[in-house]
Length: 159
View 1 (cartoon, rainbow, N blue to C red):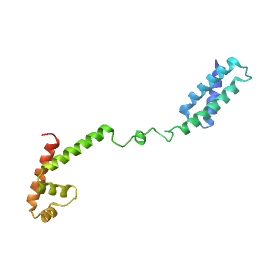
View 2 (cartoon, rainbow, N blue to C red; view 1 turned 135 degrees about the vertical axis):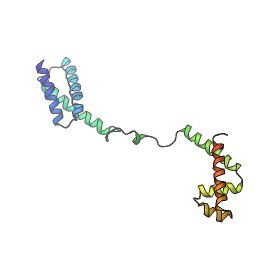
View 3 (cartoon, rainbow, N blue to C red; view 1 turned 30 degrees about the vertical axis):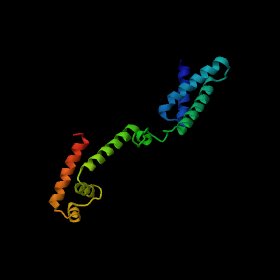
């Protein structure tokens, strides 16, 4: 039994010297040993050890080629690298429905309040700029935006 252990150890060291990753070395030697056993059932070989080392070298080369051509061979598996960042169909449908509901809620506001809210939220205008533009006081603008936000929050929640 010691002869087989010596052969396996020698094949493993050859594979490691040729650059196989240590975590793959045992798998490579095991596969090479299985190939050797299958081959020697049918064919005569002069040196089982030489056959095993040669088979292990070939298997290591195959492993390296497969890893190079594997889609995730560039390192650790990173789900973010392959994740689809686009929303799924159900998310897109929910978003479209929320937009429709928000538009319907905006349509419920009186025109001045809607203009003030959109100027603040979409155009980024300050309360002072909106008050000047609409001819209102800053306090009035603040109150209209607050009322609009309360109304829209309740509207979106289905109240």
